[in-house]
Structure formats: structure tokens, C-alpha cells
Image (cartoon, rainbow over all chains, first blue to last red; front, side):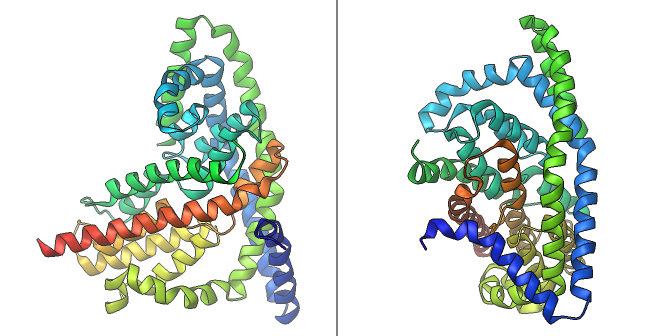
Length: 176
Length: 193
């Protein structure tokens, strides 16, 4: 077994551990699973309204040609720093909202092809950073903290680093 | 926030399509988009169900507690004040563990209760060192298994949806490490001045 086989072994192994946990414990464990699954269903259902609005908005952005024109206007800059310009809509929406970035991500995958270089870079960015501006505002506003000191600049630097690291690591891992 | 995002994109697209004469393309794109939102949610539903169930089970079986015990020595260096005084320590450890497992739903309330405890301790509207570090970790959490992303990739028809996991491990670990290092550097710079 090589390192490349590990990812596809994770899910079956986790389910194996779950099955053991259910057998070992009293009947509470499977109830916990059912409760959690119902929760996941509710979360997905609750996601649909905002996902609907944002997917409609992003598909308008693509149909109007705005997304492609922004991407091609920035392609010189992006090319110079080694990023695929197709990921521009994702980079604009990803920091702000989870459903908006899901919308641009699935649009990107269907337009560029799910196995294209841009899709791979976009996947790694999606998996390695969260919605930066959203998290900052939710965490701080929940406790009414106004002077956030170095939080914003550090989060921004980490996000920019993440974008470039994603493209670099993808180029090392995949033929692109 | 979401409303503004929606309005901005919609208005910009509308105006742009009028200028470029593509207005007639928009109406079918709008209906397509609404339809795609349903197919996307539909294809996510099963995985979200399974994954939330699995995570609830592992949580009930004490997985977060176990992970917390493993993480404690590392987090001692990342949140020195919380570990010295005990303020919000358990919430912070549980929050980081939940993020690591990719349970965002569980991580956010834990993070907010950690923030509340730290706020009650500092009695100021200025963020403490530990608060900033927790927020930065929340914006770029290390990620062991990005379940939603895998589901999205599968729905889009990737030949190998799992191929990005090892790159994500590398990039997310490096990003979190950089964020934490910068936070610690800023904190110690401030103490010196």
C-alpha cells in the first residue's frame, strides 16, 4: 500500500470504527448516528435557499460574460504569478460565504472540466481554507469585540499563502 | 452579508449583460441556476447525512475527547495564556478537534463559547492574543477529511475525487502553521514594546 492509497481507505476505515463503536457500546451509539444524520439532512435542506440564490447569481455572472471577462482581464497578472485565471470567481466569493463559494466551485468544475488543472487548484483551495471574512465577523461579533488587532492582516496573509501554496503543490502532485 | 453578496453579483451581471447585449442569455441562465441548486443539494444530501451521523457517533463515543488529549501538548504552545490560567481551555481544545475532523457545525458554537469565556476574562473590547489565534485557526483549519468537497467533486464527475486529499493535508497544515506562527510573532512583538 502506497501513500496514494491512504485517502481512499479513510472512509471505509471510519465506518469500520463506527461499527465497532456501535457493537461495543449500549444502544445509544446508533441513536447518536441517527440523530446526527437527521441533523445533516436538516443542514442540507437549510442550505438550499441560500445555495439557490447564489447559484442563480453566479450563473447570471457567467451568462453575462462578466466572469470570463474579469478572468481574462486578470489572466496576465494571474499567469505571471502562476495561477490559473479560471479560479478568479472562486477567489472573489470564497472569503465571503460558504454557499457562494460552493456555487462558483461547482460552476468552475462544470466549465473547466472536473479533472482540469484549474479544478484541482480550486479543490485544494476549497479544502485548505474556510470563509475568511465570514469567520472573522461571526467570531468577533458574537462577543462584541471591536478592536481585532492583527487578526485581519494575519488571516489575509494566510489566505494568500494558501492560494499560492495550493497551485504550487498541485503542480508538484499532478501533471499540469 | 449573503444578501449583499447576492445583490452585488446580480446587479453587476445585469448591468454588464445590458452593455454587452447578452441580456437575452440571462433568463435561461437564471432558471438553469435554480435547477442546478436543487440537483447539487440532492447529490450532497446522502453524504451530508452519512457524515453528520458518523461524526455524531464518534463524538458520542468520545472521539473528540480522545483527540483533545492528543492535541493538548501542541495546543499548549499555541494558546499559552489559556493553558496557564485555564480560561476557555477545554472549549478551545474541543473547537480545534472539531475543526480537524471537519465538523464545522460543531466547531462554530464551541468557538463562540470559547470567545465568550475569554471576553469575560479580559473585560475589554480589544481581542486578546488567544482570541486572535483561535479566529485565525478558524479561517484556515487543518483538515483531515474534507467530506463536502469530496461530495462536490464526485457530483461533478471527477475520475478520482480523492486525489486532492494529500495536497490538502499539506497545504492546510502549512497554512495553519503560518497563521499560528504569525499570531505568536505579533503577540510577542507587542509584549516587547
